[in-house]
Image (cartoon, rainbow over all chains, first blue to last red):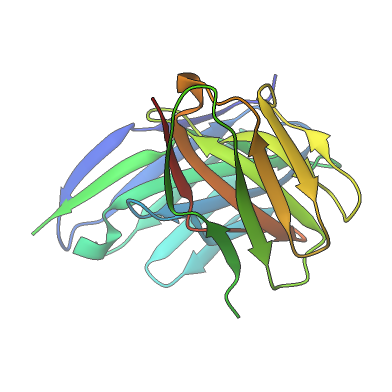
Length: 112
Length: 110
């Protein structure tokens, strides 16, 4: 069964600090991996998309990495801001499938 | 462009009542999806429509029906609401690998 596991479940950091969120998956055959940011009460918004041939992708202060061999991805947030407080969701799609597999998300709280 | 819009934003139903959640997208996407999100769980797919005229069951379709009215609109119907259907419902559309989500409908069934 395709699965996506995220860690940690929740994280509290101080404004200005960096943090790294983890995503492990068993989806096969792999097509792409996406990271989404979901603010409270809003729909998820895409941060990055990576396919098999990509091992790093940046979007401003967000940098995602992908190791397709170990089936792991990470999302690194640099110089965190209060507005980074949100849930971060890892989503993995299999080749030929319309049904992506969602992780349960990591809840990030940034304190001033 | 409004992107993906959903109505209503909030709804309270009594057990056994029916209702339809509306979703529309203005990005000319072929694929559309309905998800539910419950506390502590990832988004779970209810139904999807790969293209106009087709619909397929997702992970949790029981108690729901859908209609792909045209390329823009994809509605979700609860025929006889149950408390277990209390959730936040998200509609999404997609092009290539990217999914675009609506703002969600918060549904409470009492």
